[in-house]
Length: 199
Image (cartoon, rainbow, N blue to C red; front, side, top):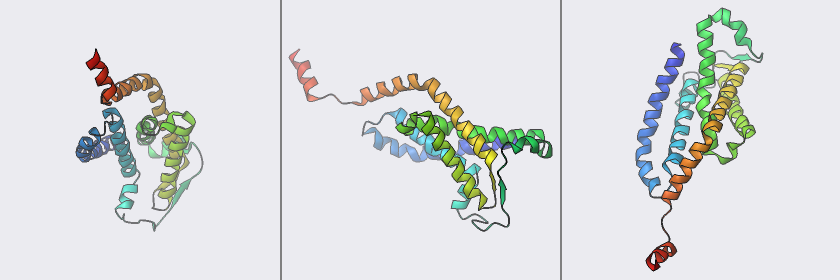
């Protein structure tokens, strides 16, 4: 449970940092008539990427982590659902918190991908995008002294698809909201002005 709380706190702090950096960018993009909802989807997308990098130890690697690519050990698990068996060794609460953390961490990613990349409106492409990102993380973790676990890949992908499911449930409302913002952002043309004057 504490591990999940740590993820939430870390994620919230990182999202705050991203938001602070975003404020000046907002005023620049507003002049280009880019809808606020679209801008926020990008901000949240960058934020969740930072959260995942920190939670998986890859951000530490980018900053020149302690072992980098020369760790004293390697750990690789290619047996699916081994976490069920390991629950009794690690303790029920510890393992469940790890499972929940791996799922929840990728839910926002699966939700935001279709907003940021139009090609990811397809469930198959979202699945491939989330799975590829998770696999890349596990692949790198093997070389930096952290565990490369197929269970993490499965749980991360499951979380991403749950996020995509939430996107499907809210898509129509958000699509209408985005369209209304885009229409409000379109400036009036000279032809419209002339018609109004003739009337």
